Amino acid sequence: MFEAVLFDLDGTLADTAPDLGGAANILLLQEGRPEQPLAALRPHTSQGVRGMLRAGFGIDNTHPDYERLAAAFLEIYAARLCDESRLFAGIPELLDQIENLNLDWGIVTNKRMRFTDPLVELLQLSPRTRCVVSGDTTAEAKPSPLPILHACALLGCAPEKAIYVGDDQRDIIAGRAAGCMTVAATYGYLGTGEPPAAWNADLIIEQPAELAAYLSQRVRPK
Image (cartoon, rainbow, N blue to C red; front, top):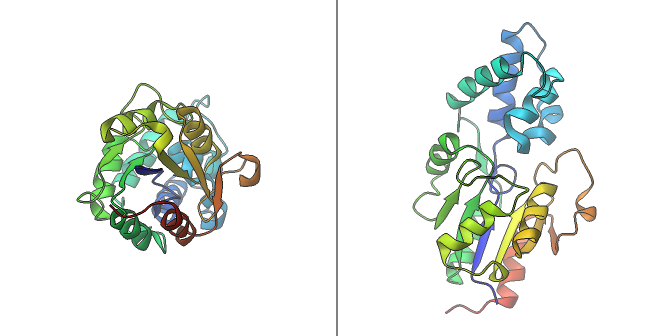
């Protein structure tokens, strides 16, 4: 029934909030502002620099200081890309299960390639993942389906035979538009919009082991 599982990166495969939030707090201090608790920054993590500047500084990309602060944030983040970032508990076992079932798996993220590729390597996923599609790999990023469709093409997998797993509503929008089965990971960051129950995902999981169990019931090892 399924041939591949595709994952979002931040908040789905890896908990990158400590490094992204840490970079935001370094920038806040540099700008003479107080640090914010990681718990306040965490829900914005999936939206990268836009989310961090919105949460930390209360600005969006229309603000006159946005480009300067964004460049400073990214420079700080690049220097601490994987200081504290780790795979979520249960992800190593889930990936083992996927590989034991002879399914391909890949990564589709909105993170820019200059950060995605070294982070995937530092997380020791590079030798295993069959494809990595970043936010600037295709002409449009999620919630456009283009990145997921590109990943399916790289794997030689029809979208309807792929599963896309994410922790943000735009992940589910993109996965559904691509024609994949969609899985909402509620252990992730979830954003600040509607709750996962309103995202119309095909499956909602509270921990990676639930997806492993789902796959084991529906896929026979080749």
